[in-house]
Image (cartoon, rainbow, N blue to C red; front, side, top):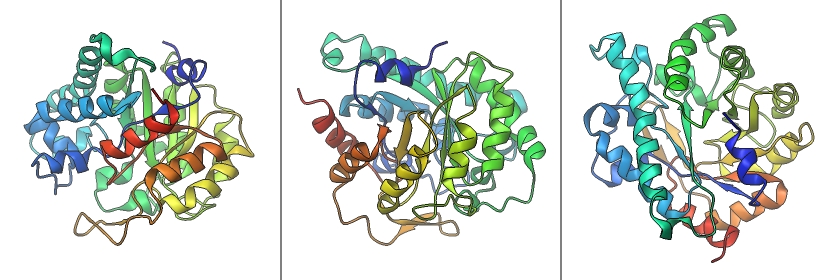
Length: 313
C-alpha cells in the first residue's frame, strides 16, 4: 500500500481535505448531542454518512476522513453491543467512504484537474472516548502502555478494512502519538498522519512544544504527515513554522472555525475567526502547509473556497 499523500503531492501543489462531519450531519437533521457523536449516526443512519462524504468530494476534497473518530469498541459496548458488532460498525465507516469515493470517481466529469480522492480512517484520541473534552486538555491519567491497549483492537479493525491511510487526529499529547506509532509497526504497509490539538501558537494541548513532537515524529518512517487539527485558526501559521523547523515531512492543518468547544454542553460558543477561511488557508499554504482542510464548524463551502484558489479551472 502506497502513501497517498506523497502520490498527490508529486502531481499537485496541495492535498485538499474535507471539513467538519458533525456540522453537516446536524444540517441534515441528525441529532449528535451524544457521547458517541457522529458514530451514533453510523449506528442509526449510515446512509447520511455517505451523503456527507459525497458533498465534500463535490466541493473539491481529495480525502474522505471516515466517521470512526468516536467509534470505539468500548463506546459501542457501553450501548449494549457485542464486540463483533462494534468492530463491524468501525469497519463500516471505511466501507461507506470507499463506496462513495468509487461512485464519485466513476463519473468522468468528476475527474477534471484533480487526483482520485483517498480514504483516511479516522483514529480519534482516547479523550474522544472519554467524551469529557480531554482531547483539548491532555492530562490523561493513563500511560503509553494503557493507550496502546486502548487503541490496538480498533486500529486492527480499521487496517483490516483497507483504508488508504490512517488519520490519527486531535491528539493532545505526544505519549498518545508514541503509542499509535508503536502499534503501526505491526502493519508495515500502512501509513498514518499524526495531527495534534494545540492550545496556542507553540504548544499542543497538554503543554508540550509542537516542535518537540515534530522532531520525534520526523524519525518515524510510517508517518506520512505531521500537523494539527481542531485548533483556532489564528495559531496555525506559528505552529506550521515550528513544525517546519524540525521536519521535511508534509505538514497537515485542518483547524476549526475559531469557536470554542464546551464539553459539558457538547456545543460550540464564541465567535468564528474574523478572517475568511479561504484567506487563512492561503496564509497556511504560504507558511508551508501542504495538506489543508477544516475541522469542527467548517463546511463544504469552506473546502470549495480552497479548491477555488488551489486548482482554478
